[in-house]
Length: 309
Image (cartoon, rainbow, N blue to C red; front, side, top):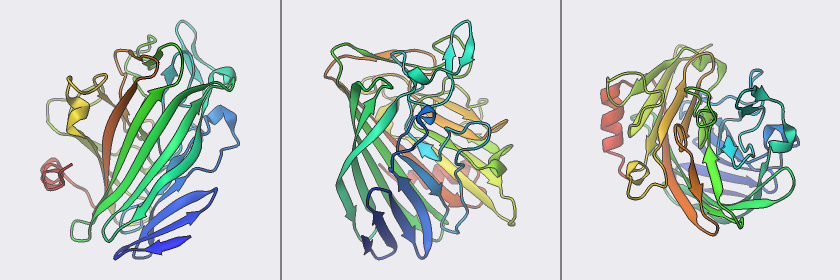
């Protein structure tokens, strides 16, 4: 199925993926086809993700971490299960290959797939399932492609999650850091960059120091690209309620590395675990701005100011 808007094209290959493009460039492909590699935590993901100029800004199954797939929702430590993929961190033993801990996220359907003149909205239902087959959580996920800006060379992707505990006991969310490994608080929505983003520049919203483990409304990642005389910038931003202690289930911190691998995660359990009681839900909203060119701090701040939630 294919539909066209004023500037966006949407193609749905049923059972495989949804592709959203602009003026002949595929901006993103949302892949929900079941992944055959159980150890990599089968789940839907976005890859490729591209700028308006066609530069790819996601990595897929890199040799160092085969379970890193573009932009994806994860939970590295969840009540003893691993919804990140790959090796599991065990206190006192380090990273261990424990396939019995690696779960999956099952695509259940798209109740919403709407293409308007200036945006595309995708709503998805998913179930989080343990390796043993138990259904632990129900997720309602939303993707919104919007704010195509040819002058700025940018566009925006909003990603929302609403997760409900299906168990009869609390779900406990953590990270390798909550399990004892310092500054490895990765979990939540995670981006893996392509190889030429390695060594790129990470820009925090303030100049108070490295953003790893910090709290802030946004951070940006810029890199000089291989093969072309061009730069790319990604901006990762929180919705205001994510950082509001009265609305967020837990405080969010940035997990970000430029080396040895380029990655960013909106970590919802970096330093402290949180629990989700049976039958209850939590929500977060995130934004990723994808841009051609090397943006600086002032440029990012100005762009986000003109891009309200």
